Amino acid sequence: MKEWILPTTAAIFLWGFWGFLPKLTTRYLAPSSAIIFEVAGGLLLGAITLAGLQFRPQLHPLGIPLAMMTGLLGAGGAFCFLQAVVHGPVTLVATLSALYPAVTLGLAHFFLHEAITFRQAVGIGLALLSVILVAA
Image: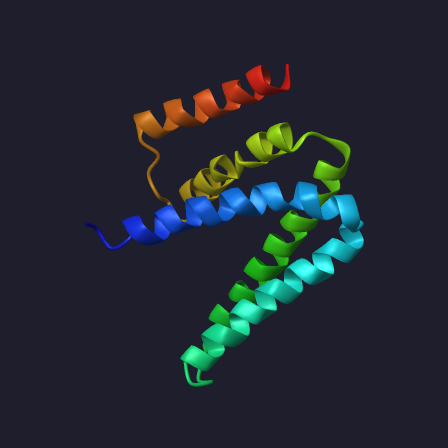
């Protein structure tokens, strides 16, 4: 089995639960409060990982701000997701927000010059069509 299969599968399930739990969370907490505890959960994972690295993370002057921006964008997306599930059904919010890989593919294509195959382009088109079908 290829090295990336297991972590990818784990990510699918973790993100699946991540997409579901906010609907329950926002029954009891406003999104502005929920995001604080969500970030605290992320900090807990960071602390456990840091301990696993014996408190010596790899440092790089460009890597650090890029990683911090990744965290900021992820938390910002999570906050927007929390706001959305308060007002809409999690089934639609999760489905529509799950189209973020189309943005990732576009960014990778234009900035990293990664190729988008015909099959991927068809997949992106079908994903966009799914927005119309799901939101109708």
